[in-house]
Image 1 (tube, rainbow, N blue to C red):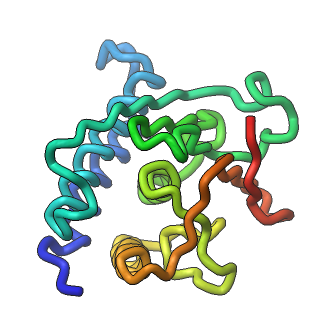
Image 2 (image 1 turned 90 degrees about the horizontal axis):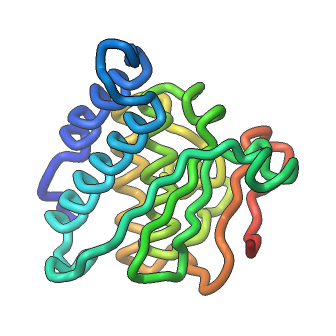
Length: 194
């Protein structure tokens, strides 16, 4: 498949937004750090949807509006110790009218800008496309259970691989529950209904 917009351009356009957030000074900006992370997530979503539309109009119907809800939470307080090592959850999976991402702010803010973007796109894909993780050996796919890109070029490769695999029907989908990620890598992510 020919990609109309180079992915590296999309990635480069998003990284400064996420990097700015990490050095953000609340007294100078007037927004809370939590609201700034939400703003970046909403902006990242819009850019990602525009990118998907440019790649294949069938991926996203132009007439369709998707409600987006981004939450920033303390997962230990909200979900209990079972999800304390979880970075984010795609809560809107299997609801084709809603993309609902809950982010564990304490873990998310420790990631680099590129890792934050990767986690968001990964969760967007779970939620928007209802896709499962790829095989544990497929580390160059954005839907790998825990592999994160080392640089912008690797991020581009991971996104291209996901789109190619998705469009060719090589990624499994699910119809209930959602994926939970464990940053310790001690256990594989699993489907869980809440």
